[in-house]
Image (tube, rainbow, N blue to C red; front, side, top):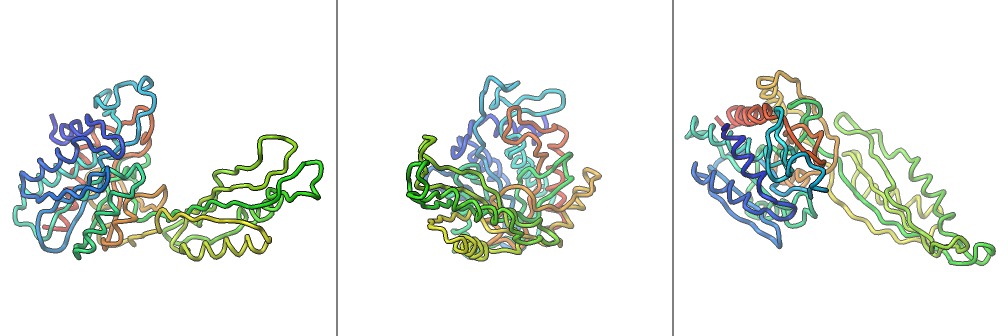
Length: 375
């Protein structure tokens, strides 16, 4: 069996539903210790984190990934058991096949081949592995980054193994992500009988013009790397359930996916100005999931694109689309950071799978990047 496929199957057989790692990080550590990596466990709460490093000099090339996976959903709807990795018609089926245990296996075997061929390479190789990316992400990568930052350990280059391809391996790599800022807005009124509106104050009616203005506002037009900032409402809740009662309050939950044209502060200021303009009585609680980050086209993106072209014959496009990733934490200590992994078409779905032929290709891409950055 192909060593990368064999290792991937080992990891995929572990039922590591977030934040449980099961034995994944132990498997990874034992494998890399054999070629000289030092392995440091950094566990917080129920989360297991692993910091592995080979070498003590710059430049530092780090791979970041997660061993936790999302729940399977209805197991009976899977064609094959989700934690029994199965090869079928050229595809590998398992929960975590695309997102993202197989990418970890690809980087591990790339390290093995690179170190064997270049025992005295220039710089350092590192891996940052967590079991809390698919969950709250409070005790995972963000905590490890805090520790590394306090120790003045930084990365020159970081590859996050998230699934980034759209149609075929290598067609897209992420060189940034939008920020995510959520709000929970409660507008206060006065409850009363619906037949006597003059004795009540309907908070839904009061909110409607302000909400329309928020939805119609052009926050920015984006830039060369990011689309325009987006405001979206996800939930509206109000009322007692009765049809003849004006409610006392209405709650709206909304989210900004924002570009580097905005900051947390600028968005908050503009939202409060609109709400105050409409003279609402309200409470607003904010939650920042992550600020936008960007690696401008440069050495790391160029080397990644070159490696992809050599292995896959594909011209990789740079993108900042999609949700958040642990890259939002790592960028604080990484000069350049990209995300590069498998096709993302089936992630989090029933029958998650990848093409078996892509497995060794991704490992070769990672190895070629090591050669270009560290040899």
